[in-house]
Amino acid sequence: MAAVAVVTLLLLLAVASVARGGVTSTYRRRLQALPDMPLDADVFRPPAGFNAPEQGGFRRYSYGRKYRSGFIYHATLTGLEHATKYHYAVGSGTTARAFSFTTPPKPGPDVPYKFGLIGDLGQTFHSNDTLTHYEASGADAVLFIGDLSYADNHPDHDNNRWDTWARFVERSVAYQPWIWTTGNHELDFAPELGETMPFKPFTNRYPTPFKASGSTRPLWYSVRMASAHVIVLASYAAYGKYTPQWTWLQGELKRVDRKVTPWLLVCVHSPWYNSNGYHYMEGESMRVEFERWLVDAKADVVLAGHVHSYERTHRVSNVAYDIANGMATPVFNRSAPVYINIGDGGNIEGLADNFRWPQPEYSAFREASFGHATLQIMNRTHAYYEWHRNSDGVKVVADHAWFTNRYWMPTDTN
Ligand SMILES: [Fe+2]
Image (cartoon, rainbow, N blue to C red; front, side, top):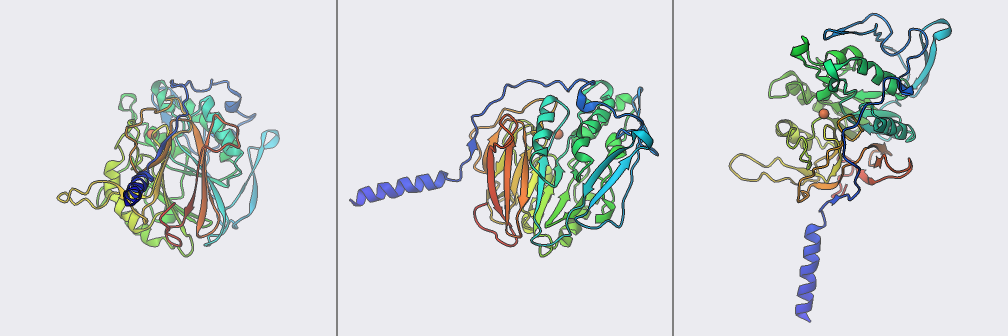
């Protein structure tokens, strides 16, 4: 009897020891490079008159030998009220087009808000599915995790593809906040074309509110929206010790007030935890530089893209290593964030489907499919997260989890 009990106990222990293991979904899409939607696709059609996103006023830039942008107009609105719908029009006379947006509610600890999470979108038919499904989610704002247009995959970085991308996403971007993270496809660094200023098309087209958070460059900054403090980092700008980004982040983490904005979310393009062979460990040097800070700050979620696949981790950290102790394995850490790779927007480069085996213990769920996610903050303690696979109906969710807040309710599960 005792032997049976011991055997049973051992089995239970064996089950318990693997209970934190992850799932590699068996769902598979056909792997292939994807063409961008044709230039005459309906989603790229320019409106009548001179009021397409790239046709405003005041700002033009040239790129390479052939491209010169239309006039691009940036307007900064001040004195806006929270949680208020504003209507605006672009253009004049018979070609003016009307839009509207709703400002986020005033920051507060229990203010509900729903974020859409999209990365590596591009402009293929799959990108169109992703955006369409996101629009049906009812979310209030998008945290965009980098790699917008993939114009640089076309000859001479054809910047007409930046124009088409703007027209493609206008149906959402014109109506609600999109918080921009920069990816490698925003670099557009092309000495062979005479283009040596990184981020030239991006910074001419997509302004960010970096000055409001004391940042000195548009590539790293923060915003407070409802009950969330969102920090955007730049994988492709210097982040080593004493660099401007490093100095800013050190100060910014001290400015986070979890009593006002309980949810601390971090956006960065290149993932720190990624079990796909594609772009494996590219985010490692930044993880080494900043991970301890985010664990000490009890960040809730770190969002990344870059890898064209989906992955969600358990709460792990890898900060014990001191070069001599050999402790360089990610371990469960209730103060650590969940890492989500959402680089599955559906761009021209196709899917990344070479997961590393065995699936690491830190990896909770992974799947090589296109899609988007949403993070619905309910109050200071709970947020509901779900990932949506494009290939299903718009109401089907392929991965989901409840997250509890690391400051107000740091449970051992999510
Ligand atoms: Fe990328």
